[in-house]
Amino acid sequence: MTASILSIGTAVPPARVSQSAARDVFAAQPGLSRISQRLIHAAFDASAIDHRNTVLADLVAAANGDTDAAGDGMPAAGAGGTILVPSTGERNDAYIRLAPPLFAEASARALAEASVPPDEVTHVVTVSCTGMFAPGPDFRLVKDLGLPISVERYHIGFMGCAAALPGLRAAARICAAQPDAVVLVAATELCTLHIRSSEDPQQIVSASVFADGAAAAVVSARAFRDGPRLDLDRFGTILTSEGESDMVWTIGDEGFDMVLTAEVPRIIGREIRDAVGSFLGEDVPDIWAVHPGGRSVLDRVESGLALEPEALAASRDVLRRQGNMSSATILFILRDLLLDGEAPDGERIAALAFGPGLTVESALLTRAGAA
Image 1: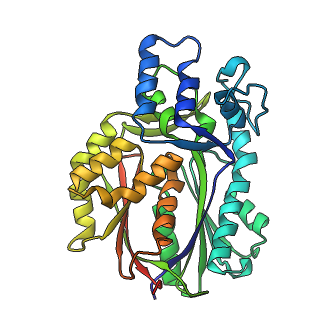
Image 2: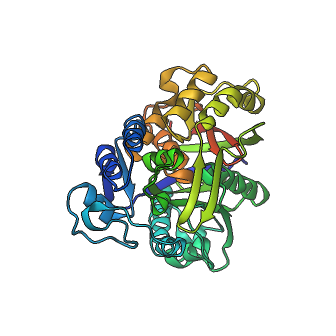
């Protein structure tokens, strides 16, 4: 029996900021050179992002001119909107407080939309790279949702933006081995906990694209209700021949440090055809779900695979509405495709996501059950 995504639930923190307001806050930070200010304006304006959500409510308040508003877990903005520099411990403490409620909110929505009672869940796979603690998000999810205490739990950590596809792959493997399994795959990322003011071009690019969000998918070979689903046909993973030092996620003294060089989209553009060709073979997808690491990544995928512009419409729309929420983002895109009432049964969807390494994770899905 084929395992399927029965539903996808999403959740975002309530604080929402326009890209132009965020740009102005970063460009107004003290001590920046004019070159850095110009680079901030260029990076934010070229991002193809309209809005992003963040757990840093006080930073959003500063962007909106309300500098007296309190934050909701980690002080991020001081007097006059100055971006503060918390320690890594302070940032991770905020993650411990703020990530579990988003895991639970997205997961509860996914279970409700799939008509799956919590006591039917047999396995939990959590995904995150923006914080860590033990007992971790997998443990908290069992407690917060009242799942059976016998649920098998797995956590995929520090695999970056590509990690949700390995999470779905693990769920499909579990369902193949245990046909009655019901697997909850939940990804939550609080990327903005690690932002900082910087003249480093890589940090500026990171600050211009990353956002916070959560998404959860219910995966099973069992049917709990009528309605659309996404059958998980197969998965692939490829390490590119270069890029090991171009997308890097490490732990520093002032938060997690993201290295995201300008070579990343160029490497993807050079290698995407061979990577995808070896995965797809003779299959020709009808539509694509591509993790929007940034606008330039989507542009390189489009040109490298000679795709029509509409092929990446769903990916560009999520980037525009939400920014790059790391591992959760691909699930936001798949949710939009799952809920597309005009899409026919049998539609083939190719999903791609990119992680440190560079790693290209792939999945081929088929829409079913809508008719």
